[in-house]
Image (tube, rainbow, N blue to C red; front, top):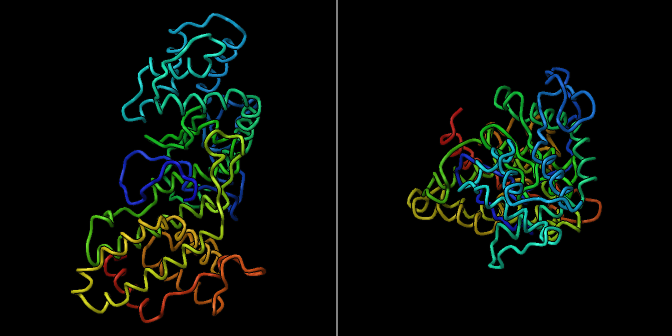
Length: 408
């Protein structure tokens, strides 16, 4: 995705996942916001709220954020804050959990150094001048969050008052019952510019929340959970050959399609004052041009489907081309958009459980697009109308391959 400073390999398998500034993220799709009628109550209060917690099985933990602001206020007020005080921040319960998601976990002394660098003007200290990427990034992110603390607090209230119910609604729509932790703990803290999940909990950076807003953050959280809990598992296409390389590439495209649709990736936006996310520029038309390019890549698969020898020799070319082009998430969104436009989001959700069903739904929908298809961005034409269908004979053979590789 354009402007992504942390490229993500969608083929990679990992037990810890994060939304890295940006496989995207977000704008509202036609899933009801607010609490579903069958939501269970958390009872009590969120740490972020001033009133009763919204009736959703999601709890916000802002303990680390509250402690960070309190520490910053002491420093900027001129109170004496020691090295031990700075390092003690690392022992806040949310910080302990967040540190455990890192590899390797940063020790308290490193957390203290990040804070000392953030407030070095007020503290009158000088942190080592040797370049340290983590310290540089965290210093900027910490300062951005502290300097905008009042507005962040308002956004946290919005999350507590209704945003978390939007996460719950999205989860209930896209993720099978029982897969999401109940209650789901969403930790709000200043951190790296990302949304991260580990051990059934979610960690949302306050800078990302501020730069993108509540609606965008809710989609980032739900999409991340979808990718972790609902994405169809399988082999890394880059490590396969022949038919497996083709089939595994289709599986990854489907997984990316649903995740990026939940995020509404082409419409991701960030404030211009964020120290790193301000560089992110998303052009929606690019997603659909990449989808068209991906259809051309699949056209080259056609001859392989008739020639087992050629398939064995050339099958690996598809995942290599897809990965090299960076098209996976973008092309996935384009395919999902075509299905949703013609067949509706319910069909997209249903098709996303099965690789052959997803490709069959895409083909059915794409055949309803005009011929010839308009160039992405043509006035009066929806972007989804720009994506052509597979050539029918080629698709029939591709679908048969997918049915064989991914039996129901």
